[in-house]
Length: 62
Length: 230
Ligand SMILES: [Zn+2]
Image (cartoon, rainbow over all chains, first blue to last red; front, side):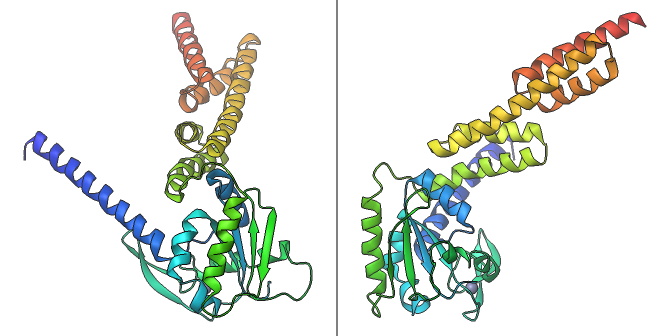
């Protein structure tokens, strides 16, 4: 392959993988609720995104 | 009931794009399963699907922040504002099947109490990644990496994260400026090797900042002066 052909091929691959990851993230957004890993992480995200925090207490707490 | 009828509910899942969810749950009898993330096979909890069961054990005591009596309804859902302060709660009143709908209605009530522009999770994740990496590099004293990642985070779209990145960058700038002052003081004494040690660190690790560039110039003139002497 010429240098140009390599460049075009890698650009096409980059576009392709960007589309794939876009679709994956859309799918994963819709396939389940995303749960925060810590209270600090939850508050940081809520403040940055300007959205509420839902604390779901499901069982007796440790 | 929560695990089988509320959490997997499609409408709730869709609505959950506009909130941050956190679970206070003990136990792992519900089991785990393999799933694919970024093309890799990983083990995740069957109910809290982006977490491992170990991870949701770690958030299991969060309920204690909000519950002061020994008994409470299960589930209890507590809605907090963007600072983590409780706005309102609902306990137990989730009839079978209707539970998820009630949570979606409560979410829209919670959103009503938080005016202003919302940002998507995708936007947040893209922005928070360089901030996290920058903060990790800062802790590990990899200054070059920290400056690079934090500068990128500083130019991101979410004001709260931009501010956090900017504050961390200021801390680095202060560290660099102090090193430069120390180096200049050592040059006056003169204790050239101690000065050189700091100038070298600055010119290697802080070169993206003014203090790093100044250090590089000083180091260069120091080298020239010493080679003339020889
Ligand atoms: Zn689990």
